Structure formats: C-alpha cells, structure tokens
Length: 384
Image 1 (cartoon, rainbow, N blue to C red):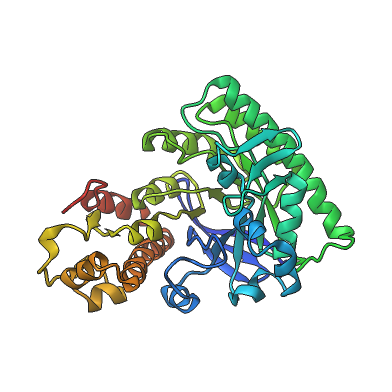
Image 2: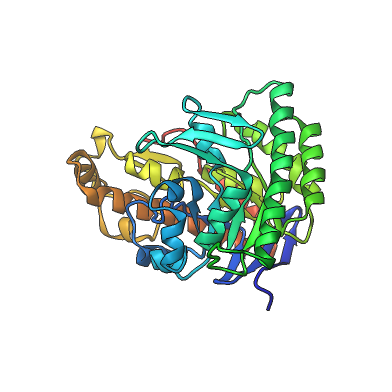
C-alpha cells in the first residue's frame, strides 16, 4: 500500500464516500478533523478523541513553530511521538494565523513577516520555511503557505493574493521535492508525508478557476479550497465551493479549510468536499454553547437552572447520557474546568457522529434524504 492514496468508493450526485490512506492509518471520508492547534485538542484527551472515533486531527505550524519549536519536536521523534497520537495528523501552514495578525504582520514576496503574539519576537515565515517545519513535525499531510484575505475583497486585492499564493505554492513544492531526495541536515520525521496545494481567489469564480488550473499544474498529492469562512455569507461560500470543487482532480481528496457549522458540512459534502476542519465545536463549547440536533443551545440561559433534561435529547454521547442541563449550567457559571470538557465532548461527538451518518447514507444511497431531514430540524438560530 502506498504511503498516501485516495479511493472513492461510493457516489451520490457530487457527494463522495472514500478512503484516504496515510502512513499513520486509513481515514474514512467525508471526514471532520478536530483542531489541535498546539498539539492538543482543547479540554479533551487523546483517549476521548479515540473513543469519539476521531481518525485524524489537525495541528498548526504557526503555533508549534513559536512553541516549542520544530527543532525540538523533531528531536523528540516528530509530532506523533511528541504528543502521543498514533493516528493521522494534518498540519496547517500557518497562513490563516498570519492573516489574523493583521496589525503585527507584513506580507511580501519572500513570505510573511510577523511578530510573535507570545513575546513580540520578529519571525519570517516563507513557503520553504513552512515546508521545512512541517517536515520536522512529520504530519501525514502538510499544507503549503498561502495568502488569505478577508471578505469582501476587491478584485485587485484578490488577484494579488491569488497569484502570490500560486508562486508560493511552486516554491513550497520545489522545497518539498528537494527534501524527499536530499534533506541535508533537516531532520525529517515522516518520509511518507503528503503535501496539499491551496486554491485561492476570494469570491470571484474566474479567479478560482485560474487558481485551480495553476495550482494543479504544480502537482500536489491533493488540493484544498482556502480563503472561505472569512466573513462571507453561507450562500456565497456554497456558491464558491460548487464552482471550485468540480474543477479539482476527481481522484484526489478535496479539503475545505476552516468550515464550519453542522449544516455547512451537509451542504459542502453535497458539492463534492471530502475533508473539513473547524475550531467551532470546541471554541463554542468553552463559551457555553452546545450544538444539538435542533440547533445551538446556550447553557448560560437562566431557564436551565433547574432543567433536568439532557442538552440534546436525541444524542447518545457521554455528556447527554449522564448530565442534566441544570448541572452543566452550574459547572459553566461556576467556572469549573469540567464544563469545557463535557461541553466539548458533546460538540465533538455531534460533529463526528454527523459525519458518520453522512458516510453511511452515501453507502446506501440515502444522502439526499438525510440532508433534507437534517435541515428540517436543525436551525442556526438559538433554540433556547
């Protein structure tokens, strides 16, 4: 079996069910990847993630570069060994984090220059540097460095960022291929690592088409759609995905970066997406929000003070089986750390279970029926 491969096993319309093979295991797609930015998914243990059925998680190059550093992690045997996670890992290049540091960073042709949010030290992250760091980390999937911009964007700004992202992609791929043959003194901890290119172009269909053509021409193991979930309305995002995903190679996984709400997962699977990640399940959990089969639920609401019901009566996760809304509200209002853990366990279960249901429906040809049923009950507005 090759270290990295992808096979589509079932189709329904544009939606695909597949298997992604990596050096650290096989991932069933469509898949949602919990975000472990600094080498840990906040408030939960690896044992929790395994029990929830997480097959792949995401780490972030920007944060791991700043602390504890790629050199240290490489000396410890790579990110899998360092953090004790034996299943696949994808690492983002840090492009989105640099984008979010708009007041302390500068983008130029060489790379992204920024000051650390930890100590103010100046850093320069280049396409080659991001590739090197991820080789040290030894993730199964490494992302190229790209330039992400906010929405709405002018055509001129979108074109400049898109074309620079293509040039950076060429440089990142050249460095990646050089590492495969001659790493020099660089400590490579996963020789089977794959590299994904990223498509940019904001909300302009013609630029998305250009970006796909240029990025695919570079030649990556697979491709991601970047530059979404940065301020645009959901319908706009769906339109961009519907335009872009079918342009990507049929035999490679398609990754939509940083998205999103549970209904986004259904809509983007229906448009041909195979891989997702988002901080929303765990971030919202820490802020007291449960994502349920009916929609978001704010456990902070005073009406739950004596409510003996579970957060989601349709959920079989540990939190919903064991604890009442009254108790969970008490934990949150009292500032107990356990609140973040229990809330996160539910939200991650909801996301991962939703993806399981989608995969099963694709096997049996009932995905469209499941999608319509989901939209009949789930609403983005607060239910309580």
